[in-house]
Length: 246
Length: 388
Image (cartoon, rainbow over all chains, first blue to last red; front, side):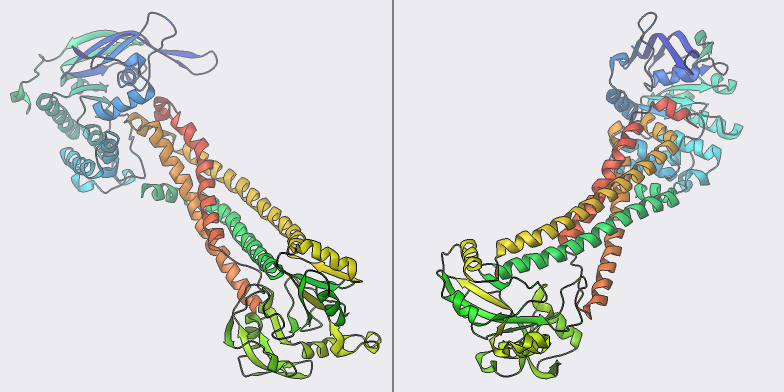
C-alpha cells in the first residue's frame, strides 16, 4: 500500500476579493513507502503547494469539483482535525522548508531539539538525538551557534538535522540543496540516499536542480497545477544496501 | 530560558511594557500600604472603644476637646448599667501642631489604677513600668514608642512639657496606633497643662483639678452598650457618647473612600498595564509570524504556541510586579523613615498587599496575553511560513 495517496487534489488561494490563483487543478499522486521522489517543475507549477498538502499543512479544497482523497499511512487525512494533523507532522514527518526556517532565538542544537520535543521525546533524549543528527550533517561543532552566526548552507543543514530528529517515516524537503555549493549538495544527496536505503525513510524533494532529480528514484514533473509526467530514474532499489555509497 | 531570550530580543519594548506595569503596581503597593495603615489605625481604634463608651462634651472635636466638670463622672456612674466612669484629660502635646495628615502627639492624663477590673486596651511596656497610684500627684510619664524615638528619650530621662519636668518611667511597645504618639501622665498633671492652655476668659470660671476632657464609661456586664450610650446622651447635658459601633461608622466612611481610591488605582493600572501587554504581545506575534509558522509546521500544537506566548506575557507581568513591589517598598520605607521623626507614619506594607500586588500583576499579564496568543495559534502554518 502506498504511504501517500492523493486524488483530485485542488488548491485555490485567494489573493484579493476577486483574484484567485489555482495552484493545484486536480492532482493524483501516489508515493510508496521507501521511495525517493523528486517534485520538479517551474516556479508557480504548484510543487510547493502539493508538498504542503502531502505534509498535512493544508487541506485540499473541498468545496468544488470531485471530492478530494488524501491518505497517509492508510489514514484518511481529509477528515483529520488540526490536532491530529499536527501530531502526525510532529511524530511521523520531517520538514525542510525553503529559505532558512529556523527559530532565530534558539541555538542550532535547540532548534533541532524543538522538533524532538514536539515528537514527544524527553529533553535529555531530544538533546542526545539532536547532537547526533547535527553530527550526521557535519555541524556538531557549531551546535551552540545561533542561526544568525551560521552561513546559509549551515542553516540549511541544521534544518535537515531538525527534519531527521524524530526518525520520520516521511521527509518533505523544499529545495534542500538551494543554499549549498555543489560539494555540499552532493554530500547531502549522499546522506539522503543512505538514509533512504538503510532506514527505508521516504523522501519527497521539491527541487529545480536536475542533479537532485537524477539522484532520485522517480521524478514527478508538474506544470500549471497539474502533474505532467512521472519518470522513473533509477530502478527501485529498496533494500539494496550495497548501493548506498554511490 | 527561551522565554527570557524572547523578551531580551525586543529589549526596548519589553522594558517599556514592564515599566508601565511597574508604575501601576508601584501605585498599588503605595496606596495599598496607606490603606493598610489607615485601616490598622481604625481597627485599633475600634478595639480601643470596644466594650466601653467614651463621653466627651458635645461642643468639642477630636483634637481640641472642651472641658467638662469632673463631677459628671459621678453622675454617669450613678446611671443604671454603669459599672464605672473614669475621667481623663487628653490634649495636644504641642498646641501649635494642629492639623496635618497624621495623628498629632497627645498628652493623656488618667487616674492610674482607676480602670482596674474593667476590660481595657492592652498596653505592653518595652522599658520601665506603667503609671501607678503612687505617681498620682507626681510628675511621672510613660511614652509611646514613636514619641520616645522622636524625642530620643529612654527610661530615667527627664522630659520637659510646658515648663513642667517629668520623669520618664516607662516606654510602650509599638501599637501601630494612637498610643505610639502619646505621652501618658497622671491626671493631675494633665489637668494642670490643659488648664494653662485654656484662654484666660474660660479659665476664670474653672478649677484645674475639676477638669476632664473625656469620661470613659465601663458598662455592667450584659448591658446593651448602644442603649446605655443613648441614655447617657439623654440624661447628661451636652454629653456626646462614642461607642465602638459609632466609631466604626464614622471611621468606616473614610476607609470606604480610601478603598474606592485603591480600587480606582487598581483599575487604572489594570487598563493601562493590560493594554500595553496586549500591544507588546500583538506586536511580537506579528513579528514572529514566520517563527510561529515554522513551529506549527514541524508539529508544535496550538496549545503549545498559546502556552509559550501566554507564559511570556505572564513573565512580563511578574517582572513588572516584582519591580513595582520593590520600588513601592523602597518608597514606603523611606517615607516612613523620613516621617518617623515627626511621628508621620503613613504606610504599612503588609505581606498580603505584597503578595496580592505580584499575583495581580502576573494575572494581568496572562489575561492580556491570551488574545494575541489565541490569534497566533489560529494562523495558517503555510501562510505564516510565507509571511515576510
